[in-house]
Image (tube, rainbow, N blue to C red; front, side):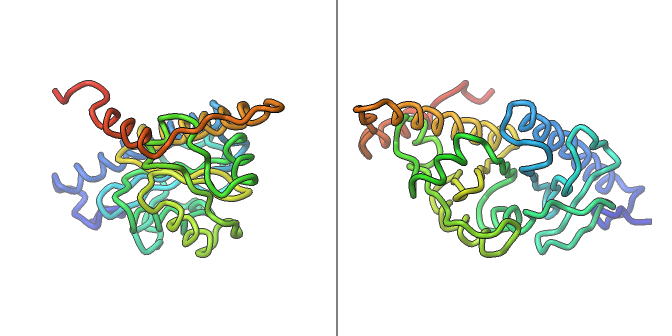
Length: 233
């Protein structure tokens, strides 16, 4: 017998180890998806999350409330989009997720319809450099031109906006952020939404124009941020 997700013998140690990794990744994915809803980054079943384990991409299913998902609802595809695990259909934004996983070093992707970020996506072609955390996303966050959700056109527009960046806005739609882990991808999503809120708040003050950071200031912030946090154990 072979493991449906790995193609390896289900009784062998490598197969069990890989399956355990997929099971743990699925639980982390569901926790992250629920967090996007709990913290107001999505409404209902909007938005989606993915995480890569080897050549397997786990994704949230389409049209299913996150609080209903269990370990038995695991949905997985290969990098070509062929479903290899699960009875539920993958997210309608599968082309978007696969494009990020194929074309970047992403291990995890979070897509939301965050309110302030979506509002900014309708106003400017790029989020102004309102805060030094802009540097943590690779530089000023671009807005990908509008395209119908779930299409290859949207995925292409997104990849262009993500060039040398780890997050972007989708015009009249929402956000995309990726990282090495689900936690990192989520944190980048939350930072982007917060920066959008700061810019909208500052730019709404009558008669005042927000001060923006210069490229040299962002470069200095990027250098400082590269050493941020606790040193490796």
